[in-house]
Image (cartoon, rainbow, N blue to C red; front, side):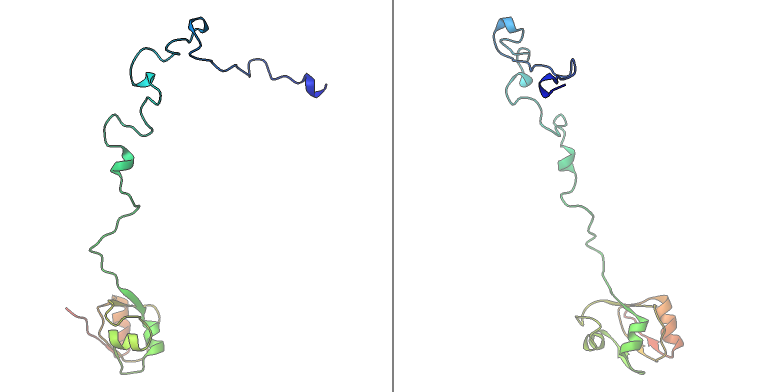
Amino acid sequence: MELKDLKPAEGSRKARMRVGRGPASGTGKTAGRGMNGQKSRSGGGKGVGFEGGQTPLARRLPKLPGFKNFNRVEYLPVNVKRLEEVFEAGDIVDGESLKAKGVIKHADALVKVLGDGDLTKALTVKVDKVSASAKAKIEAAGGKVEEPC
């Protein structure tokens, strides 16, 4: 067998249909497109995603993914073990002191103290929120929690 002897399998290759080549071809005049209408014209037919005049799904969905709750309040988390590392006994922990010690970047940021770690020093904590476990640890160490209303 040589390269010249190779032939495709019977029925696997089909000649393309030559449309609009006169009445004898069987696809002359209207070229198999029927008479009139949108689909008989060049470029005719409905586009991808067309839903019969209904607003397409791609336009009904939001442009960007996800949902952003504009009422959400973000707190910067500060753990009890961080307070143990940074503050001395009897210190007051508030936005200003946290910024001064380099724990947070902005003094006016909302801060929540969380209960990860242990605390052995008595501290007065004046931040926006304190978790229940953190409050228990601060009070067990002899400290005090003062939350704003």
